[in-house]
Each structure stands twice: as structure tokens, then as C-alpha cells.
Image (cartoon, rainbow, N blue to C red; front, side):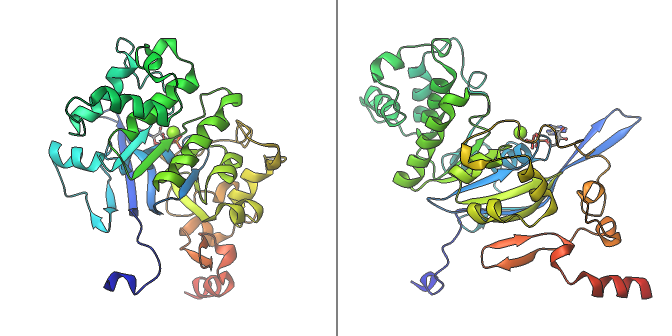
Length: 341
Ligand SMILES: Nc1ncnc2c1ncn2[C@@H]1O[C@H](COP(=O)(O)OP(=O)(O)O)[C@@H](O)[C@H]1O
Ligand SMILES: [Mg+2]
């Protein structure tokens, strides 16, 4: 009862200061790719949080850390308030994945071409101990029903190549659902699908959010689809999450200059889902070069000296709305102090 004192619901999954540096190159020349720096996010039951940004901004790396495919360089991942990064070993991972599942961009490469759909759905049920004696066939049918692949028996007997991209993505969703997860991390789940069937997949995920109270992270480069599907939107640039809030507010009234630039490439979000909205937005920053300041500084038309020296902290704009940009801090004062010292 004591946890009810505060009305704010507890996040199901939370990232605190999540950071990932990849060291690549040869023995003679090493590079550090700062893929994700100090990422903070909270996922709640029955809510979709969109993580939006250009290709290479670090979105997949965040999702992969959250599902424990990548080990973070630093930071914490809390599931139901408990940091789970210390839980090592196969058993702990299996347990974690029974709560947190991931859906990948390419539904074809994530399915085994020589196995029937039935086998893809039986496997997680068996591995996670969810299979009920003598009920496996029914359980598979029920999963197919939930993702609207009917007639179910017919789909269960097919091979992945006999399905369309959208149908394969439905199988991937059914497979994720098999373990009865509470969190689904969907990494560009519709980017590789025909525009005409994207909405169907997003609607299916929205239904799962509403009916099963699943917490979704929706990773996308398409900010217009975030407005359609996500309750909350986080905007990412070059390894940093630079702005966040209710999707409607972020998209109608973007604060960070990068979000403003991103949205200026979307002529009319009302027109529905678009693709490649960021393709003509100039060069992607070199993540081996990003340093101490704001990574957007080199492209920002409002850039100030301080932007190049130090990453701005979080400025809370309203209860559920924030950005990391000096334009929204009392920057004049800081500049004076810096000049005097
Ligand atoms: N396994 C890896 N090893 C080295 N660099 C990686 C690896 N995975 C991702 N990166 C780099 O991290 C950066 C962010 O990549 P990613 O998270 O895939 O971005 P996004 O999903 O936003 O397109 C890119 O520069 C990418 O090349
Ligand atoms: Mg990606």
C-alpha cells in the first residue's frame, strides 16, 4: 500500500545513464564509437514510447542494450525498479527475456527458412516453459489468432517464404507474445514493409498495448509515424536523446533545434506515414569524433560557444516535457561566468 502514496506509476523498464562505446579498428589504430551516451528513458504498461532519430543515431544500440544483446559500457537498466545488469548467466537472461522481448526490422532474416511457422511459435513456448501438456497446437493457434493470421491452421503449416513481409512481421510479433512479455522493443518494425501494410502492423501493436497493457518501445526514423502510434516521443541525435515528451507536444511544438529540423522535412504529418524523411538532412555525424559538447552543435543555426564545450543538462519545460539545449537555460549567466574565469 505504501507504494500508492505517490500517484505516479512505476516504470516497468527504465534506463539510467545508459552508455555504449564500441571500440573498433585494428590493433594499430583504435577508434571509439560513442554510439549511445547517457540515455535515460522510462517505459510504462499500456504506453508506447517512440525513439526517433536518423540512421546511425544509436536507436538500435539502445534497444539491444535493453534486451541484453549488448552489454552497456555504463549505466543502469531497471526492471520493476531493480537494476538487472548484475544478473548474469543463461537462466537469468531467459527469465529477463520472458518479460522483455524484441522485434527486429527484417522479419525474414529473423525467421528460419526451413522451419514451418508452427515450429517458430512452439519453440519459445517450450524454451520458456509456457507450453501446456497436450495443448501446444491450441496455444500456437491462439497466438496466430491474436496477430490475425487466419485461418490459423493454414498459416501454422506454411514456411516463411510463403508469407508476405507483413505476415512475417506478424509471426515475429506472435513469437514475441508467446512468452507473455510485459515489454516489447520494436526496432523499426515497419520500415522494411510496403507502405500499404504498415498501418496494419502499427494498429496490431496498438491493440496489444491497449488490450494486454504491454509497454512498447517503438524505434523509428519516421517521426510522423511516432505521432500516429506513440504516446510519448524521444528524439535522438548522434548518441544523445535531446528531447522528450507527449508525442503530440513534441511534434506540434518541437523545442530542440534538431527536432525542429527533423520536422521541417515532414511537409504534412496529417497525410499519414512517410518514409525517408531524414534522408536529405545533411551528413550523419562521425561518432568517433563526437566530443564533450552537444553533438548537434556543428549543424545548429543557434550554436553558442558553450554548446561546443559542454553537453547541456536536462531542462524540464513542463511536467512531462524536457529538452537538452542551452536555448532553454539561462545561458547568458553561464557565458558571463565562463568569460570572467
Ligand atoms: N556492433 C557494433 N560495433 C561497432 N559499432 C557499432 C556496432 N553496432 C552499432 N555500431 C555503431 O553505433 C552507431 C549507432 O548505430 P545504431 O544503434 O545501429 O543506430 P540506429 O539504429 O539509430 O541506426 C553507428 O555508428 C554504428 O555504426
Ligand atoms: Mg537501427
